[in-house]
Length: 149
Image (cartoon, rainbow, N blue to C red; front, side):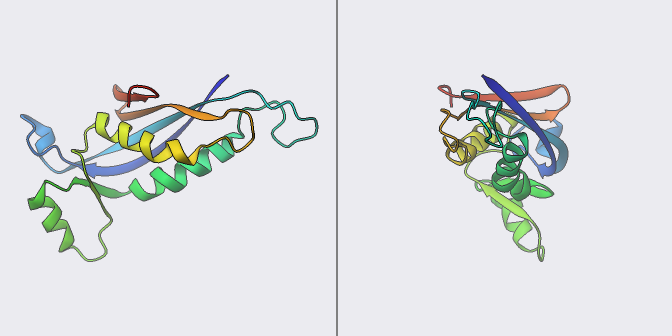
């Protein structure tokens, strides 16, 4: 069985070598969808009976490990030294320095790597992360899928 939870956050970024507008500092209203697989829990009387995972628990994990750290932050590539160095001069600025250029594809892959260990088999029902879909805009997204990341 597959289940999916969607969360949203706001963040800034830039693609330093982009040939068009994305080379400039800008932001997005991102959405992230977390898809998990697992068996439906059949333990009579268990709070999660009939579920793969409680959706509030799915949200809590994604919130803790990806959404809260990235929300209202500037996601900057460590190799983009001009911007990374500038952001260091801003007092109390929320900056997340990444080892990759913050494209939708790389952010989806990074989120998958972060969340893969967080969603372990907590209920004994073979729970595992299958896909992270990261929307950069309502019309553009990237999928990081198990076995392809």
